[in-house]
Length: 153
Image 1: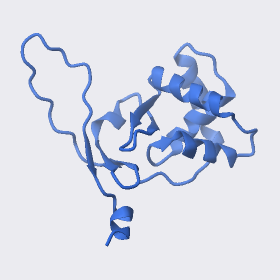
Image 2 (image 1 turned 60 degrees about the vertical axis):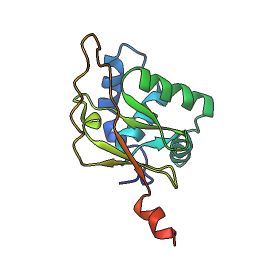
Image 3 (image 1 turned 180 degrees about the horizontal axis):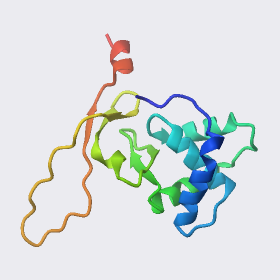
Image 4 (image 1 turned 180 degrees about the vertical axis):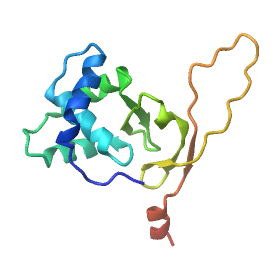
């Protein structure tokens, strides 16, 4: 389930442009490229992984500052999820309008720092004491992924 190298899919650009436009923001090539890459990724990606994949495209390179700004904008606009892995590195994944990404568990490898989406339901939320209001809850599992487990004696 870990993300594998891929490029953005040009066929999805009109839908991506429409989604960005729906936020009331300006559609830019950088936003479209990064959001398309996140939508096509098979798992959460860190800044370095995104930068590497974008550099493999035929389009001009995107500088690091622009990439950071685009990723932060996508997260603020609700189009991407931003979460730190076990090493404190932020990883990004595309959000869906139906909240699909929020309805499963994440496994965080303590050896490589990878984040994996698990097809498991999250536990039910606890009942909070009177007066408390739940804003959000995050559930993840930590341990060693199959690749790292195979490397250990």
